[in-house]
Length: 97
Image (tube, rainbow, N blue to C red):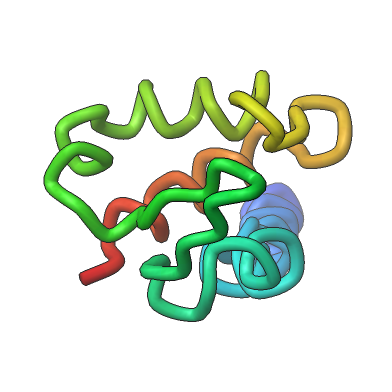
């Protein structure tokens, strides 16, 4: 019984160490186009600020959908990021002020 508990504890801790970090993923994949605070605007690419009430109104599902499927000139990241990374990044985007 103790071995099972110890094994479960180790697996849980390992999973948390490798869990997606929205800020880190944002910096690696989104920063160049959207800026550190999400306020960057690139008219030629159709990049609009992320730190707006309109983006916040989309909620997690809306932002997750855009990250996954892409929008306009923004590429889809569904095949390039895990579901956990996408969810964490969407949460981070919604936290931008």
